[in-house]
Image 1: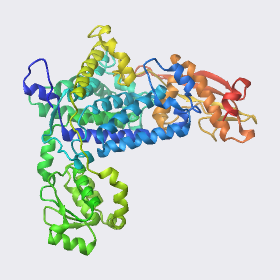
Image 2: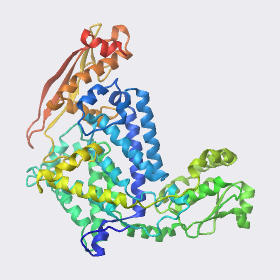
Image 3: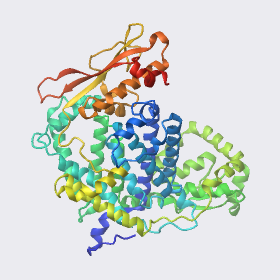
Image 4: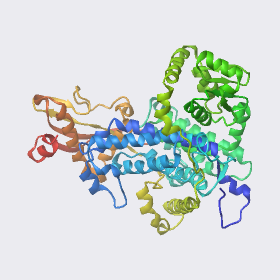
Length: 606
């Protein structure tokens, strides 16, 4: 589909906003995996963050939410209800990965993601905002046109050309580039330029820094160079990506440098999924030239012959689906009965047969690894799975499926049946994409005062409702100066003192060796506790204290019940280079767990 522009521009300029369909397939798979991993990590704290038992019960969420927020997760405060929504969302994420009913899976994933984020905004991080934006644009793009079950099992042929250009492709590319360009614009403090102290301050945030980041603190010159490098790259990358001259080279340079930057963030700072979501967004910069080169090397299955049992519909559909997912469109798929050699091997070994480029026949699990080795993007996994010690368990798994193929076929019929699929979104989707593209530009330009505030104002309520807010202010205008950690000393009914956050230990106010590594799901708990000490979230402190009391007393014996606790934030302000930091104790909240005013709602009700 071609971008319809009121301004007649040369195709070379318009093609800057095109995305290869194979790139969109990679983007889809990465996006689905990130959604699944994010939900898997959140599951550990489902009761604490999303139920009425936790830190943000529904009556608090409803009164705290803005007018332009919605959440299906507020329909019930039950842990089981929340778990059911999580499972549904994880299933939609997996459907997105394999490209099964791709557009429906993207819509369901987006609706449930927006709902989940609106359920408890106190734990949101930068990755959440970017993830919802990427998924929004994904709904308007042909994510399932390549390497998908949709493409393998459809009556209609997928688009022949890999070149895809539309308002939605332009919107996704500009969304990704906006993150860097407007973040750089908002980094107006002298810490970035000309002082170059931004990386120093970022690595002094112990709630984020890793041991590698701590080690880098010993090299002030390198930290200053990195500050200039990050700042300059965020300005330059969008210009390199959209450069009309030698675009393959300039885009490749931008992609490589941005990927290295995020890998550096990953090594030095614990930012949750943010580096991974950013790397996922960068996949859209991969041009068709790379795929063509990989295809030339692997021939995309040319010369591969995949033989199945003619009497097994499940076998035929499985072979088609596997070749589509591995991006092997030129592989020849036909019944083994049509080839005397393949038929003899199938009858002798009870196996499908894959004959590779060198005319070598592979059976059972070895046939699967042969296909993997031929894939342009999963070939390394084929070599890993070819290890000798994996062949026996792999063959046993194959034999189990083969011996029960009738039952497996019946169970998977709903998944592998042929059906019509419309890959390219219609004109209505492109009109929506065009409207939101200009809305994103208006919001971002007004946020940096390049346009009057009223220009971006009208789109803010809709963007807030959809959770595609354009707030790219991480470490802008400068990195945070305030760091710290929370200590929660409590007193039991028997008079003993305990550390509520670390049962079995006595309270310690000493600085932990690695603050960023002190919780099973560190980033969201650290984000939540850090916000509690800020004045605008002071009204949430009591809810956290009541949750801690409920959670402790629900598990404790009568004499070990929690009588009272204090929320203490150990505030550490980062000093300028060369000076020593000082730590202050801030008592945020004192709470009596068994007081009459809180007994009913805090303990006995659960």
